[in-house]
Image (cartoon, rainbow, N blue to C red; front, side):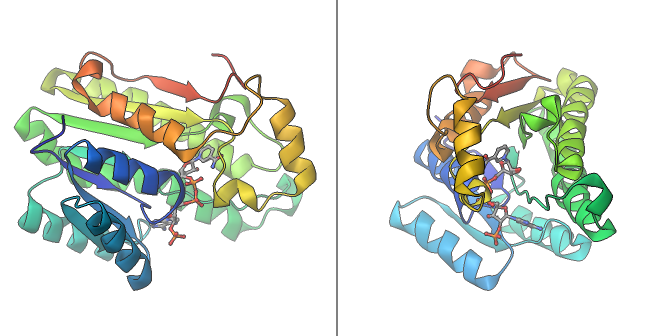
Length: 246
Ligand code: NAP
């Protein structure tokens, strides 16, 4: 299905990004998965090789401009310009507003919002020239609903949703689609560090009675980059077991 497509997935070493990288690879894409340490890159390489997926891990801290730019040029030379960009990398630095440090605000805005802008800008020119591109941005349900203790994270994710819509309007005529996925409560390291009490409270809000799995999100990504979604752009798809209904 994705034969001849090059997909760039940020934060592919674990969690949702790992599942996305594998699912796109199994669908035939050449996958470049980014990690922020040499060890991450090795893990990504091994994970792709184990499934005989073309592509490799690449060292990219999405908040680091020189690293982003040189990695992008290397990818372009080695594999060709990406047709698919999945802006997945993300972090949390939760705190109540009055206690939140500047660094916690800045780190989350830089990683979860600014990097989406920068990575997309790098990939967009080639997509526009090729008259083909599929960009999927990882948002969050809290980008719509808000969440106490997450002013930084929810603001970044709301920004991602708005960026998605605005860019979708800019580039639709060139057959570049830009969509977002808003996961609810997904069982990854990001949510595993929450207390049992917090996890139980979240689970109570999910009509399907279970946390989502990374694969639930990866399947939605696969849909957006497949032919089935050719006429869909600027949308935010909520994948949350009914936790929030738009
Ligand atoms: P995760 O398990 O914590 O994984 C995050 C990934 O992002 C890791 O691979 C991490 O690399 C990478 N990353 C972090 N900072 C980076 C940077 N500066 N440059 C490059 N990569 C970086 O999180 P997840 O649950 O899979 O989340 C994936 C995306 O879904 C995020 O955007 C998150 O906000 C969003 N999301 C998750 C949930 C959820 O319930 N889990 C809900 C809504 C939205 P390392 O492994 O090296 O740290």
